[in-house]
Length: 232
Image (cartoon, rainbow, N blue to C red; front, top):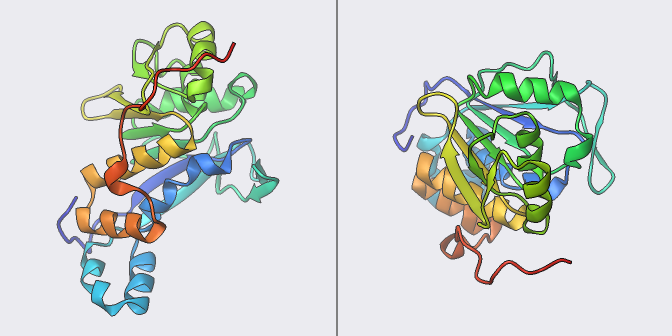
């Protein structure tokens, strides 16, 4: 996706926004940086970056919840959904899940995830978002990770998944070319998003965005630097 393409059909990015950690969704801004609106704004502030505008990608962001009422996220912030689990399209380009209490997610969200996994190209999760996805059965037989503090809980609660002690894990999705990206806590999710966008979009735009956010682009790693601690 690194070549200029002003006629590209907008990517459709779905975000499950219900009872989640706001920080788990920070990586979404790396996709936002790819849009014409953001790149135009950046070019206005720094004309030297104007050549990046040719790599802009139209993106439609869909915020999905159990109703169209304001959806709660930490810390006491509310977001207006654009779709419900029933009305949201299943054939998205990208779907993002932050971390909720995985034992309390809505049944209709699990139905949506099962159906979307058959047509959505890339699903990314951060923190306990992987446990949310796993409850739907989408991660059965797959390698995945979740918040490091919750790995033992995940292994007991959802043993059908091969839980890995890694900052992020990538496995194949449920049709040819589909991918499942799962990350640990919010910081891991940012690193995962840096890696995902760097692999799939214009590298100069991604690096510029990371520099603007002061994300540690070159320090990102798929692996923890220390052994898994004991939380007992």
